[in-house]
Image 1 (cartoon, chains in turn yellow, cyan):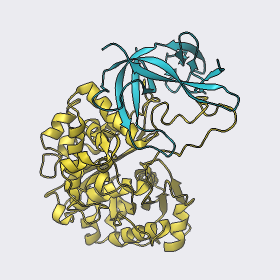
Image 2 (cartoon, chains in turn blue, red):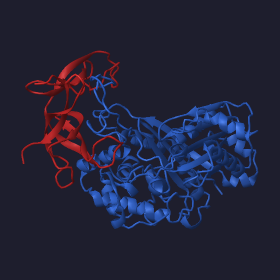
Image 3 (cartoon, rainbow over the protein chains, first blue to last red):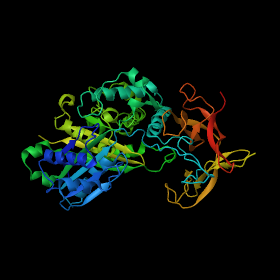
Image 4 (tube, each protein chain N blue to C red):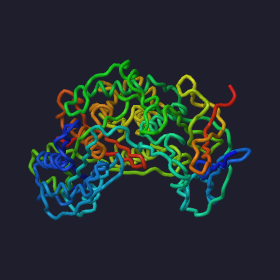
Length: 400
Length: 132
């Protein structure tokens, strides 16, 4: 027996538009499907962690329980920006590691179809006399007057800063990263968008925040994902079929951004990701070269580039060369975002951190169909939420 | 001339408008917002220090799609003012990738963003290209 945790069952709903399903329907469906996938039901679950960031659902965990099983177990409703799903999963892992449960359920759900630009709040007309407010003592909202608060603009600067530091970036490079993910999505029936897009189409689309055009931004959509986690001791009591499909969690890590010069001026998404990756590789006893696939947080094309480096898939400063080598394409040395990534699969925020784990787990189980990465044994799932929080999970195929 | 007030409380107007940072007396970390304590070292005392008026563009984006009411396009940038990073818009430059460059040298400038009911101008800062 070991301290290892296992994903026993996991599910991701179709990402896209679900006009007839509300948050509770979607989360409930994902949770039940994950339980079915693991061959267990709510009576075995001893802890539930649930996340919904923007839906205003309040206690989403209890709302889901009221649809699928009010068993009286503790519920943790979590919120951690775009890392909310990973935080739910991590919460369940901690409870099991602490010995307070042997079976836990993590759920993330979001409805964002038609949500538009995230991070931006409409301006209202100034009336009366100037009055200072906020922590900068501003007389008007600062968005648009002192930089930008739009996510597309913030992450554009993140990619541009990398370019300033190491060189080799331009509009076309970032667009080619997006071209890769849209190409990958054509094999993913659960993706919100699964159309291949040419480089010309991507570069010629509506510019949101240079150098990110619309298809280079994560797609707002509806979706949910859920995972059932069990302890090693619990797994040993289960049927051989359940054990065969279980996926080992080799590392589960959550970090925040440590203070550095500039980090409160432009969010630093690099150091906390690098720290999470370092801890995860150490926990797992593997290195980047052992990974067969990576699902990383490509909320914008400009973000994917920096995370090649932050996750140490390349040498420091070598992300442009890494991409240009073809490595992150699905037939390359280190397939990245074979699901299509957030740019085409979609980004229902609180679901994303579990959906990425589902994608990796599905490959490790050899159940990814036409987009299967053959022989995948070890994979990494990464998410980052501004504020900031970073979740990294490293998964390994069960020994035969 | 109408009365003027700075757009934010860390902008000082006058003959030579400049920004003032709150510098941690313990470790030298600099901040622009109202502080409880230093996020780097926990010290609770800060000193006001002037920030150099010139700097270099370390990152930028040209925002062409923003929240309703935010005028576009505009150039948002991270400017390195001799070791102190500042967030601000680039002004006095065409907002297109042919005219805005990483590493561009810029200097702080001010402009009026609006006038309130009492006739007071709000004056904001931005960074404009200098030299070539």
